[in-house]
Image 1 (tube, rainbow, N blue to C red):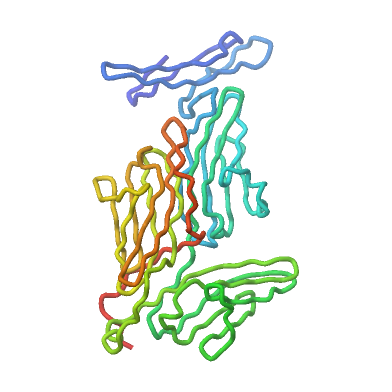
Image 2 (image 1 turned 45 degrees about the horizontal axis):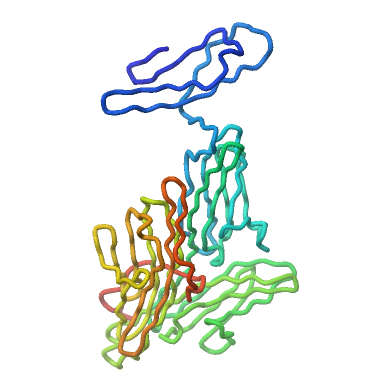
Length: 385
């Protein structure tokens, strides 16, 4: 056994025999504590013969029970992006590894062919090409062998594409698609079919569907859906339009009053103990609504771990650092002005360091599965035409 100046310890075995097979453990200790790592030596062949020394590398930990070297991480992606969830897990014998979507195997879903499971150990990947809003949810990876099981759960949030515009601008939505036979394309504002008129133009050529609005107004805000269909099926894609109103125009004509409502809703989240987690939503209303958050009916107030943010006049965000099982529960945001009041809820669930899963209250949330984030800030001065 040798120890070099860099702290690298090597154990060399010469002329190994079957008696040398087994698990070797290197332990280092001082007055502060101790650390250890293990490696396994297997000897093949029936005849004893001289062989080069075998070096045991501690780079890859050894464990009989399945053990995560690298756990998957919760993530966010935009609709249409490719999502990749990765992990690294070991075990002896090599564990069987499978993935779950909302705690069911992807094969239970009609769109199971859309999900790709890759890797033969110790690295594994779960890929989702062209992610859809409906793919938001909890994803799990489970590794199992005869000695035990290891499990990790993460949350994935797919955000809708968004488009920002000034009152009076001309804007255009584009959606690339394909199909054989060639699909028939329709556009919807919320759930209302958009018909060709002087203010709205639609076109579809060379695989790109377009919707052009010649002069946007406040009434044009909201979610737009492109639907492509043929006799074999249907596909949709969504985006959200947000219209900024220059201050000069507000001075010329009084702003229209609006009761509070949600552009987008908070999503349920799963986090590991010690991670950070955030809930966010987008709102509208005039006068601007005020917002309050509560957890299981108790008002949430800012602290060293909890931050409540307001971004522009639209986004409302609740952030929690270093989550614990005490943070598990149902979170509700209430928005209100003198014209009305609206509520939306989402769960936070926590997995402890020991892998125990603490689910939030299983209540029904009014949140539909759609969301968006906004790029950029609201201009502080009006744009001059």
